Image (tube, rainbow, N blue to C red):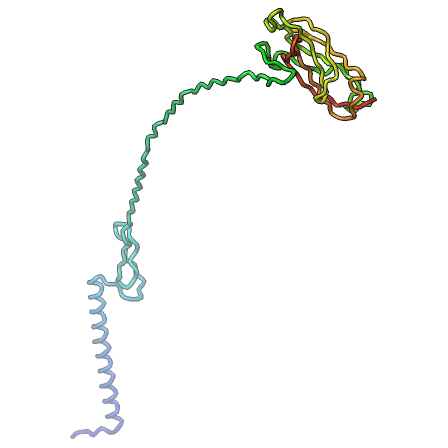
Amino acid sequence: MSRRRGPRGRQRDTTSNQSQRILQAVLIGAGILFLLIGAVIAAGINLPGTGALSDADDSGGAATPSGGEQTSAPPPTETTTETTTQQSTEATQPTTTQSTPTQTQTQTPTSTPSPSPTQTTTEATRTATSGGLSIINTVDGNGNGFVSDFDLEIRADTRLEGTDTLGDGNPYFIVEINDKEVGQTEELDQTANGVFTIDITPSMLQQYERGQLQVTVQLMDEDPGQDEQIDSWTQTVNYEPE
């Protein structure tokens, strides 16, 4: 005689069957999971999120990050810079300039005074280089550089050999102040290096006012006809009357 189950009995059977199905699904899922883990371990693949790092390679490269991606550092680039400097040297040959010395001969002609009505040019005419004129014995009472009295000193070659047909000439001096004759000397001794002094008297200067005077001494040769000038010298002096 069959026993009829009530609603509660059918509910228990249903719950028992569901529990068995869930247990079977869990077991099957666990088995599949273990299989996958085993396959992964066998393949040597790290699971994501495990934090496992691969060992550094033998060449000293960087460590491979997790995720299975291996990054290798690029090989160092060797740059070789070759600088070639070529210096060209230009040989410079010294230039030698040979200058031929030029010899210049300058001849200074002897200046001969032009003849005047009171002068006759002869071979005895000489230039002023044969002597000299100096202002001496000056008197400067005020000390201002202007003198009231002075004398003259002449150094001259007074030899007049061969100037006259009947003798050797008769030398003497003429004194001029500002181109005006103020006196003359007696006949001079004939000597190669004569030193002669001429006194300038007040009467020679009384016609001149304060200022610069040009004093000229002429060496003359007295002749029966016209006297001739042999030499001359000129100096200047500042003069003021007393």
